Image (cartoon, rainbow, N blue to C red; front, side):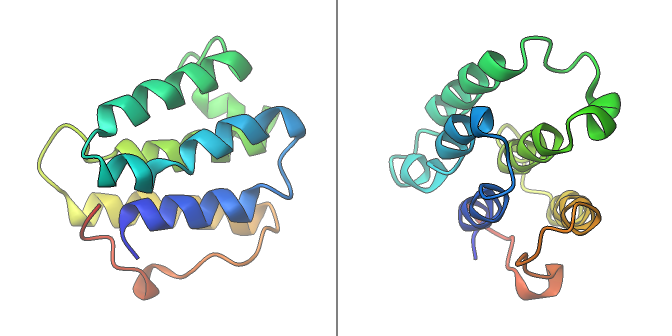
Length: 126
């Protein structure tokens, strides 16, 4: 699974649990493979940021508290952050796997199943 495939997989796993207001954001995030194919991830990033701002106008100002206040928005943002993790620099496999591992741990804390273990996923490409 590429990073884009993992992003899609995670959004699909979260969708049944997320409040309806987050569904449009998750749908936008899940379009990542299309933007990879077009080689235009900056457009994907812009669309994701626009969608996130609609449900979280103060994005970035209280991310840590968000984990407790709105865990599904926290996961949504975490999935997006995984997608953009290497967008503007050299690919960093170790930090990408750590970011994925943190998301998996929070999925488990929220009793959301179906995620694939880090060892099962190839996060080496888009």
